Structures are given as C-alpha cells and as structure tokens.
Length: 380
Image 1 (spheres, rainbow, N blue to C red):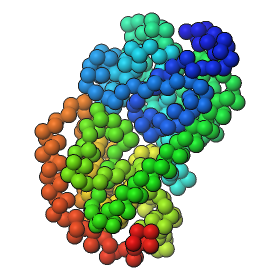
Image 2: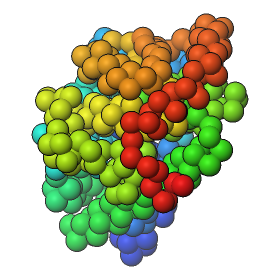
Image 3: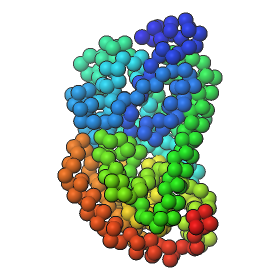
Image 4: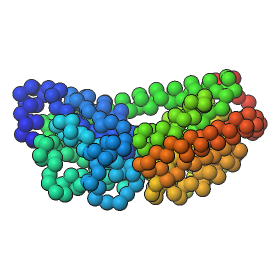
C-alpha cells in the first residue's frame, strides 16, 4: 500500500485528491475535528469520517475485537475502525492525542487527555491484528501519531513523522497544513461561541431559562450521550455545552470581576479556588463551566453526563455539584452511561427534571441577579 500511495502522488504531481483518509469519529476527535479537516484539506487529501456510534455499528464492525476492559466510549472505537475498513479508505488515521487545545491554557497546570482515551488507537488496533492483519488484507495503512495540542509547536514534526511513511509529503507542507488546521479550529470555536452568546442574549431578553450540559465532547455523539440534551430541547429549553460557552471579556468581568478584585482568583479563567489539580483538560473546563453556570442567572439547570467506568470523572462529581449548587442552580446527573439506551427511564428522568426547572427557574434567576452587579449594556 505504501508504494501505491507514493506512485499516486508522484504521477499526479502532488495531486492527492484520490487518496482517502478515514478518521474514526471517536473520543477526542469530537473536540478537534475541525483541525483535522483543515489539516488534511490543506494537504489535498479527502477526509472520510465514520458515522456516529450506534449499537448496529458496534455489533457489526467492532464486537469480538476488544482486547481490554474499558469504558464504552473507548471500546466503541472498534466499530468505527471496522466501519472505515469497509469503506475502502487508503489510510485510517487515529491520532493518540496526549494534550488538548483549551481556552484555559496558561491558567491551569496542563491540558492533558485521559490516558485510556489517548492509548485507545493502539489498544483497539490490536483487536484487528489478533487473528490476522485485517489492515493488510484490505490494503489499508493504519497510522496513530502521538500529538500534543498543548504544545502546538511540536505538531508539525509529530504529524510529519507519521505521514511521510504513507504519502510523498514534505515537512514544509505539513507545517503549513498544521497552521491551516489550527486556524480552522480557532475559527470554528469562535463561531460556535458566538452562537452560544446569541442564545444567552435571547434568554435574557425573553427571561427564559437555559440548560448547561457538562460532559465530554464525545457525549455529543448520539450513541455515547444518547441524545439526552435533545430531550430537553423538545420542552423548549435552550441547551448550551460547556466547551462552547462565550468568553467575552465584558461577560466574564460581570460574572467574575468581584472575585478578582477580592483576590480570590487571578483571572477570569482561574480555577485554583476550587480545583488545585488542574492537569486534565476536560476536567478543567468542566470545573470552570460549573463556576460560570453557578453565577449566570439564566442558566438555572445543569445536566452532568458521564460514562460508566470513567475514572477521570469520578473525583469531580461532588466538587462540580457543590460549585453548581452554591448559588442555587439546579444540578442533575446522568452517570454510568453505556452502550444501552434505556429510553423509558431517560424520558421519566427528563420529565422530572423539567418539572423542577419549571417550578424553580424564575426564583433562581431573581436570586442570582441580586448577587451580581447591574446587567452589562451588552445584555440589557
């Protein structure tokens, strides 16, 4: 396969549009996908993503290929890889993401990924090699580079070392593609945060409560998060995700300015007052978003999603709940999520939560408004 890919590239004079790169839509790809789209588009390669996680995908392509006991989001990767093998891609690209991009970088100790999640590409790969080399049989090259978004200056070297084995590419091309990818990720992030701000402004104008979801980005996957956030939207509640909250200076000054003046925190993004061990990227952002939700009046309910056997989440359950409830915001948790979707029990729980939101939201809004300075002009 290596020779075929090189021949294609050379004969077309760096035209790589005939080469398909399959990327599993799994785990930390949910928070970095725009980078990969921008990166590979810059190199002229065609990107093919697997579909959302589903029971059918896992049963058809992944079952029997699990070589370790882990949380379902990690095990589900086997289904994504198997699906891509069936799509006749040339390369399957599953990055081992050691550290993540984060708006908290520089305000926390580090932005690391869960170690199970980081090693998933190599662990799950073993299931496709256990009896025979399924990648070789399909003529597919499998690469899983170690990447550090927390140190973006290292990305060109990390990605070049893997890609040069499968396509004819120069270091300068990879470096330029990394710049393009980082810009694409930044632009996407800015765009989605602006949409979240629009929702917040609408809530203020209409005096309507919103719900904030605290989870991991891959809980947006319908097969991992079971579309619980969508259930609340059917009742008319706007839903915000923690990783795309607006971070405009004027808004954060309103919410956190008093704590900075009092010397409790050093900046809008400081979480050292509630969380000292700030190494994990997702955990850091969940903690920060908990502080945001506890203060912002029109976020009256917080929904915590977590997967079964998630060791990274377990130490955060109590601190997050205490932060959220410290100023009267309602807190609810859907923990122990796995591959089964108990639709009936989810519906009952959602209806119960909606009852409490309808009963207490207006009182929560008034109480939190009373603890803040006057509304900034951007919201009034």
